[in-house]
Image (cartoon, rainbow over all chains, first blue to last red; front, side, top):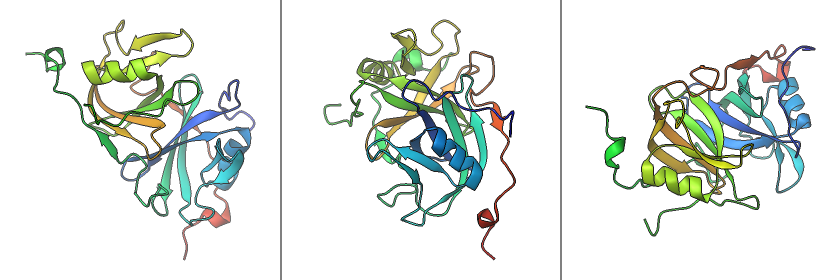
Length: 118
Length: 118
């Protein structure tokens, strides 16, 4: 692991982590990682984050049982974002929804220049 | 649109925006939106972000031609993250890669407790 790439944790020590269901491709949630959360995720293969509100390390599902087994990890081109592909053991969202992204925003009518080219 | 949900732009005025290919489900990139970028995205249906490094509004693909037509927008449960499902008109990454998430991180051998239950 000595040469394994490491995220650029930036000025606040955090990177955004996107969590995607490895089977369905659904984006389940976005959370934050500091170095400790990153290392815990690699070590345990369970998605672990930094809670910005509670200011503590947080293994996803530690209390609910809805852990996320990590299948694949990727960094983006400037290493300031992480993509986790996971097998979720239950709903990702504290509301009980499969994904935290359940609120759809109605788009206004398509502008003309967004139509497919003829 | 008066009642359309709006992201919670937080203390720094930004939310993380995850961009997913509407057809393949691939996560293409993560970028940032302020209120102006959000409103421009809704109005034009082309993914528009706030560049934290250049400190300017940035329509994805405005210079490269690799714009992203927005098909669906969702907010997460606390409205501090945005999911855009898009039809990309070219590579998402400035490197020419389809997705910015091309750097795979090798995972250490699975710990015993990550094995499926018998």
